[in-house]
Image 1 (tube, rainbow, N blue to C red):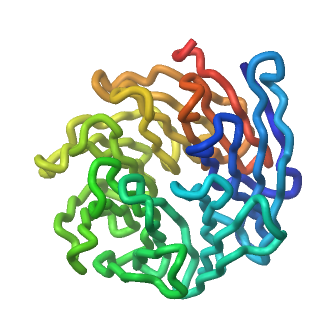
Image 2 (image 1 turned 30 degrees about the horizontal axis):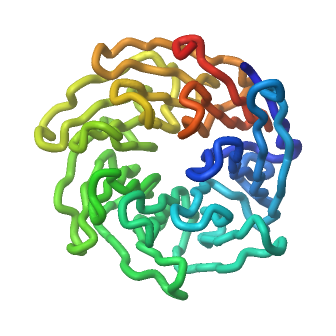
Amino acid sequence: MFAKHRTTGYNGYAVQWSPFFEHKLAVATASNFGLVGNGRLHILNVGAGPSGGVINTERVFDTQDGLFDVCWSEVNENQLVTASGDGSIKLWDTTLTDFPIQNWHEHQREVFSVNWNLVRKDSFLSASWDNTIKLWSQNSPQSLQTFKGHSHCVYAAMWSPHSPSLFASCSGDHTVKLWDTNSPAPVQTILAHGNEVLTLDWNKYQDHTVVTGSVDHTIKVWDLRRPDRELNCLRGHEYAVRKVKCSPHSGSLVASTSYDMTMRMWDITTGDMIEIHDAHTEFVLGVDFNLYRDREIATCAWDESVHVFTPRCLM
């Protein structure tokens, strides 16, 4: 299966499959490559079976500034949160009006990442270029907590899928930091790469394992109990690694995207690159695994297109 959808006039930044519906995909986009101009949130319906290969637009929501990330609520199947270039965070309901049902604006610079708590399901994190991470509840008009410790842009903050209070962040200061919401300061710092760390994700099957991607073109696999050196260093991307995503279906499978215009897949136990998807014609920024259709992957890129497909390595 290979399906393609155009986000005409808008460059793709992030994709996320719904945790409730196998056919529903959210895409965060920005006009003019996110440098200036509007954003648009796309809610797509991806066909299965005989209609596999057909992608229809269910809703679009327009914003005054570019959207850099999106995540679905873990408690309400119709709601999702976006991260914006103007420092705002917006909560949307796909069954309601064209306007956000909640709007928070505390960050002083671009918000680059939003991530919903997978265990408690009652809160989410935002990571910003103002060097901070904030904790939010959809029911609170202000952030619940602000975490300071990075000395450069925070590109991502991701909840552990194994703990209700643990999360990890990565930054332009070359580090990965481990945090507990019960403490204002980081509980652990790893000098992860020799350059900016743009992305990280937790392994869904090994609770101490984190995967990072950097401007140095590499992906590293870490055991947080032994932070002095990585378990594995995966080489193959020709430019900065923009996104890493651990499979929800396999503890050894990781997908990555890069400014080299490819999405690649890796076996982190062997270190082998097992797939290259090179059908995009611009920087590839977003990637996600479908939680219900275990062979289906979505990517988005600056070429104004979304790809939904089954990689050869999963056939």
